[in-house]
Length: 162
Image (cartoon, rainbow, N blue to C red; front, side, top):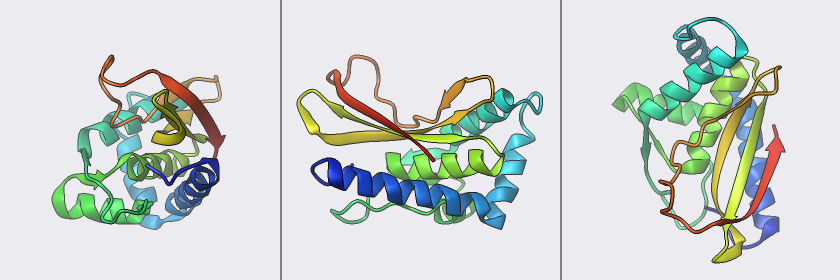
């Protein structure tokens, strides 16, 4: 996901957090968030978060970054991709930004989590956003979560409040 070491990871997380904040203020992203939120059974924060989770999971398709360097795709770019193709293409950080921006546009607090695996604990290899509710529930938007048993044990995990 990111360059080697904690410093590079924190730089990428900072870029992701900024992209979530910017995306949550984008008019088109706000409109889509409201559209997705209208799919919730009720307007409760948990149901809004679950609606975002279900929708993002259903429209996401994995695609590597276009270059060897990590690229954090803005939420507006992801939304334009959806408008053109019916899907949002990207890697885990791109979908974390997109889902996080949708949640934040619905006034849900957002966290970004990064993990490394025991085989190489100094390289954070996966990330996702989670939407939080006032009751303390956390709804993960881990779109590309590996199947149980398909990856080595997690060595390190860090979460950041957006």
